[in-house]
Image (tube, rainbow, N blue to C red; front, top):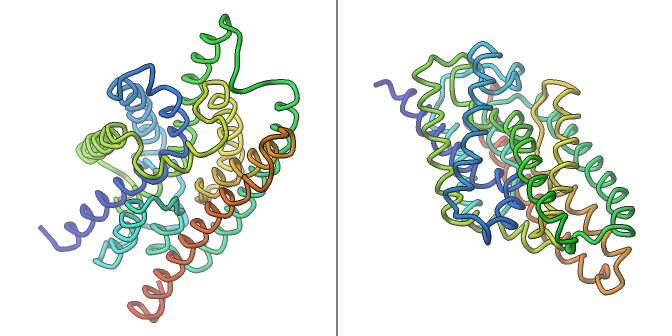
Length: 318
């Protein structure tokens, strides 16, 4: 086996684990938090796996073997080298530390040109702002009329079903964005054998994430106000999915779903703190600042990788 093939498969596995362990909690974190008391972890895993297999297979069929949903049209396939695997290796370390970094910046930085990365960054900044503003406006209204943590007994089943449905839709929308961060290591047109390998690897990794309860990244979700409740989870899912869908239709550039997710939670926390008397900004600010600091740290790591690859390893550029 050629060395480049070894790098390709190693990079793919590292990226698959890191992306799913770090980023999937954005979409499945509230699902896990609000359902773990009612269902076994393997039941939740199987439900998420069905949508995972469907989404990847759907993209493979409809995009001529491309499981990235066309997100990598501006980043052509390259012969994978050792330094390409450096990005998911760094991401793996950050994931183990519970730092919710942008896998889009960190992984794609090893492959994309400066021009593409600049456009990805701008799209992600806009996504953060749109998510934060949308969440703030929506939750200012909701908190005046709806208690996300309390419900009439006859409504419990409705919100539980709604949460499962919206979680599936959000999981589908998120995978359409972030599969590019895994597929970047693979040829843009996969054969059936490669597709099966991807499915087995991603479903297995997802099982480990569910078995461990989401790992340390799950803390980013559960320390937010009311995210353990089905009604809160359902509303978060809807807003997040709509934002992701909007930016998917906008253009084929990848974007940081982490930034969108953090922006959504930021806007939500600010809205709740401005409405609920006993949940003031002094309690919210440390949470928001901590998440934003981790996000900036991840961006800094991405920039460092870009500079090392483009200026030191490949001084002539890509």
